Image 1: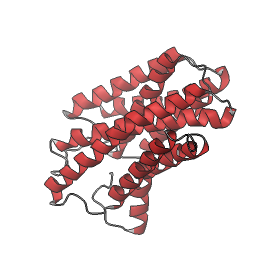
Image 2 (image 1 turned 60 degrees about the vertical axis):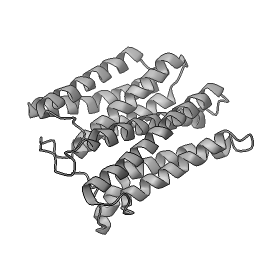
Image 3 (image 1 turned 30 degrees about the vertical axis):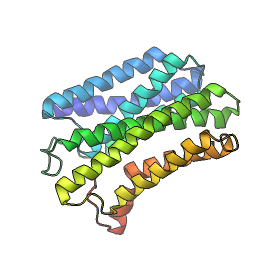
Image 4 (image 1 turned 45 degrees about the vertical axis):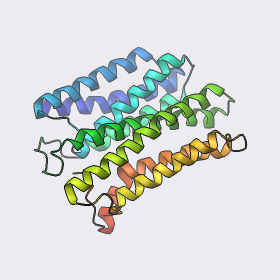
Amino acid sequence: MLAVDQGIYTALVVLYGLLALTFLVRRHGVPYFGWAVLLLHTGLIALRWLEMGRTPFASLYECLSLFAWSGGLTYMVVHRFGKERLRWSGVVLFALMAAAMAYGLSKDPAVKPLSPALDTFWFEVHVIPAFASYALFVAAFAFEFEFLVTGARNERLDYFSRTLILFGFPLLSFGIFSGAAWAEEAWGTYWSWDPKETASLVTWCVYAAYIHASRSPRLERAPSRFLNILGFVSMMLTFLGFNLIAKLLGLPTAHAYT
């Protein structure tokens, strides 16, 4: 079963890369191809779920897969119902998804039992909203990227980015609060200024500033665009960057992926 899992995982790296290339070459992409790739990815997640008997979101191998699937799904839903002729947002988003999956191939795919700290009700309650917010934020960044490359004054792109962040912000807030409740249950403290906790708070502050700027006539253009990009960078550092930095610097953290 593990060999099948890895085979599909590897195929998805290629398919997400081809999907990014399709948006680049065909200018507006091939939506049916995108949905077919996501259907295959859904099958991979379901297969691993059945194999493990739990939600497959514990290891970095699994989390990178969840990140790619949720980000791709969010983009395709907006692409379908937004009815905009988009190009560069699809290129950057699916290139990011391909890169995430490719990085996942370097991680251990073995099925392992949950550690005692993860084997709790809070596992799904914290992880699912957090990754849902990541998916919305990465799609918002992709639409911002479309504007930066084309320079087009497209109000719909602003609307897409703003709406996605407005939905993602409460999910991130819930993820942080549920994570604090989980930390109190597991380690006896709600907040310990762990590198990942601190990074998540910085990300929350950046997106809070974006929401304020997007509603201010004086700040809704360039400042809010800058904050959208900064929020994406901060979110990626929260997800992956500070985990690597903590390892390199030998910083203690309870949030290290394996």
